[in-house]
Length: 171
Image 1 (cartoon, rainbow, N blue to C red):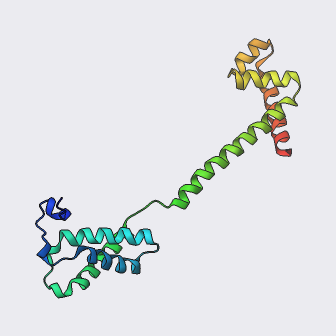
Image 2: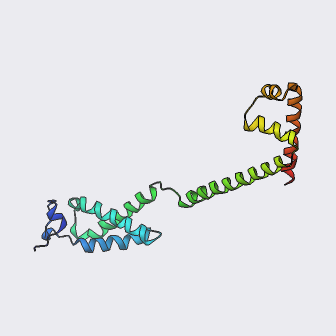
Image 3: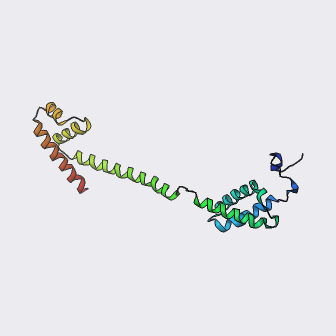
C-alpha cells in the first residue's frame, strides 16, 4: 500500500520536493501561537487557522529563507482575528441560566406566601378572591352572583387586597 500526502491526493499540486515540511510548519505555528493565546486550546485553534492560511497562500512566499518569519506574521494575524471575533461569554450565559432558576424559586415562594395569606382570610373574603381571580369574573358579575350591590363588592375587594398586602408584607 502506497501512502501519499493528503495534499497530493486532493490534487492541490504539493509534492514532496515543494520545499515545505508541513509537520515542522505546524510546530512553528504552534510555538508562535502560544505567545498570543491564553490557554493551550486557544493556541491550537490559532495555529491550525494559521497553518491552513499558510498552506493556501504558500505560493505568495517570496523568500524561502524567511519562511519562519512569514509563518510568524500569519500566526500573529490569525491571533488578532481570533481575538476580534465576538464570542459569547460563558460566565454571563451561566449567570443568566442560574438567574432564571432563582427567579422561579422566588416566584414559587411568593405564590406560597400568597396562598398562605389567602388561607388565613375568612370564608366570605376567600369567596370574593376566588370569584374575582380564579373565575375571572368582573365586579358586576360577582355582585349578580352573590346578590349584593356592586359598590359592596368593590369595597370588600379593596379591603381584601389590603389585608393580603399586609399579610404578605409581614412574612
